[in-house]
Image (cartoon, rainbow, N blue to C red; front, side):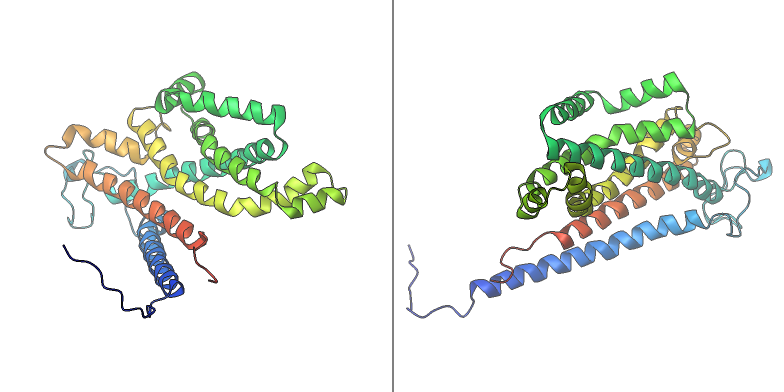
Length: 299
């Protein structure tokens, strides 16, 4: 058995050096996530945004003589589908619908979640009780089944899908905002604002919410990936936006019967969805790591 021998001399590596090394690794990791996430997201978002000006065939243009051409065929980078339509064009134009639904859904859910969570955390009492009961009730319901039920009742329009996904996601934002506001309301600047006679709603809107909206917005960004997945799942099950909208989930659903003979009809749209989800998650994680307080700072 060996024992450590103490030389009696102080170590050249101090606690401050260790803290700096840890902070450096965290910054490098956050920078790597940001770059990787930005690149993956841009590879999907930019072509989808520019789909209308790219030299591509129409998303609905059929050519039965060129059905199910493999990828890298002449004039068809992603190949063609079972009706001879250009798959890349369908994926890019369908992505416009999927991304529009996802972005609108997270914006609405973010506004609802921040408002409800901030009110519950700042005022407490019956407001907190009501918001908390709504959160618990919604989180207890199966998410996909609830979405399918609402869509079945009100119809699978783009507006309904957007509102349904927004209502499904607001609890995540509300829970985080509530916890952040509970911390903020105990700080000295809130007490000073109350002493000065400012109304409670004014203190909440002008001072507290601006201090919590940045970390809450990171959760909203991460929810974008979930919103796109939910829209794709609904479209795959036939409960998404109806034709002529060619959403990602519907493209995969249309090609599932040919997966053994024409793998690209399902695989390539699925890879596009996966690339976007990975990119958004890496981007959100990188921003969260970059804004996280570092231990040992200023030691």
